[in-house]
Amino acid sequence: MERGHPVAVHQVLATLGYGDAIGNEVLGIRQVLRRAGYRSHIYVQTADPRLEDATRDYRELRDESRADNILIHHFSLGSRASRLAFALPDRMLLVYHNITPAEHFIGLRTPLTRSCFEGRRELRAYVPRCDLALGDSEFNRAELAAMGFPRTGVLPVVPDFTHLDVTPDPMLARVFDDGWTNILFVGRLMPHKRIDDLVRFFHAYRHSRNPRSRLLLVGAFEGFKAYLGAVGELVARLRVPDVHIIGHVSNEQLTALYDVADVFLSASEHEGFCVPLVESFYKRIPVVAFAAAAVPATMDGSGVLYDYKDPRHVAALLHAVVSDPGLEEEILRAQDAALDRYMSADFASTLLAFVDRMVRAPRAAPPRVTGDFWRQVERSEALDELRHERPSIYGALPKAPGSERWEAPW
Image (cartoon, rainbow, N blue to C red; front, top):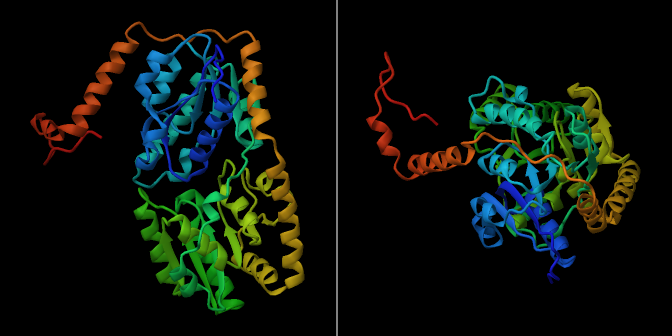
């Protein structure tokens, strides 16, 4: 219930996804702020259709903007919403969710390579703009400090597991709950997650340790079908059976897959936090993960970390975890303790303390933008509308010299 604070605290981000870590955090922040009496809305460029009623169009933020208000800007990639937020007079609290370094995508024909490069470059422009910059992990906070942000902190991730407290999909449960060893990975099937390494590790484990085993790869792969094609070629070349690329799943299907898993395996080389690790803690699945980026901190002294990617070494670790009930129970006890520490974090008090700190502190210098900034914003929006609503008009543009056909400029 809003009690009429003179200061409003709104959130802005490029897109609000359904069921993902950032989306859950954004909704949780709004709930905390409203319970504390702040007027608080979520402004986005796009939203999952299931969440559209919970959001407002980012362009409406111009009418809500006030110099004394606080704008929580969730930064994961550069966007039109980000650039509009930069130019508004509100105090800014930036929450950084990490951007994968572009070098992980070099050699792949994906727009994400450019987006990640430009996003990291754009982030540096916010150093003088922000009153406070928070990472959702210590790893992300350290990146902000290294970029030159003078005031940083950590807004801890408090995982929400309601999406796993549903009735598991009975079909998946029947298919995979058959006495075989199920090695699970959950996360977007992208190059920096090193799905190819997971295949190599599984091949070594299945060949040398346990032929009655399978690898379950769960997660969206839009924009990376070429990479998944290369993974498929690796599977064929190694002649390793029982690799299941399942893709994006519902909450009921995800719950079923966690339920049948015997071990969670990660080879990812860049994570800002990695929520599926903690989901595995919650579902009491032992975790074996590569010690890179934020993963060791997220594991918080639990699970099994490995430092080098020798398939025989990882296969031996998997075998030890799966075949030794005493070792498995020891791992699960450590993961239970880590999960308890996550769940005991007082997210609401931490967030409100950061907001109160901003209200009381002298504000950063107001943003500096060019005199024609807002006119350029309007032109960009008009161009974007034409691009999506009337793409055929681009057929009237002259062809580039020597080109055989016209190609869209996006």
